[in-house]
Image (cartoon, rainbow, N blue to C red; front, side, top):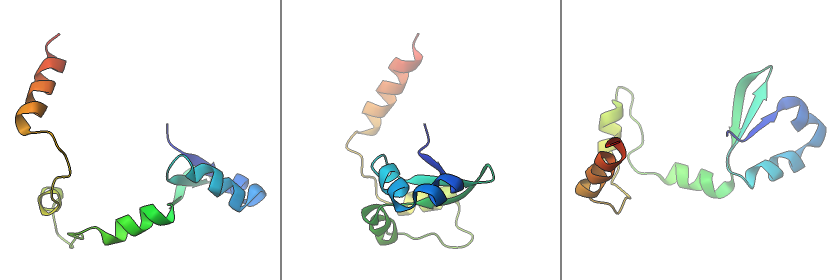
Length: 89
């Protein structure tokens, strides 16, 4: 479930509402039943701006993914095997 906060609740509770929400991750703020903003913790923000391979206009999603090294520890074989096992019902 998405971690949300309405603009009305933000106005009423202020920073306490944001601090409470950030304990669960990024906070999506809704205004008039539409997404208006996302609030990140300072650590998440620093990680985001430090990311290598920043997007370039015209870059495809595949090119962006290929520019980022994998942080995973599973091999392709392990992933393929897990997918096979999950789909064999």
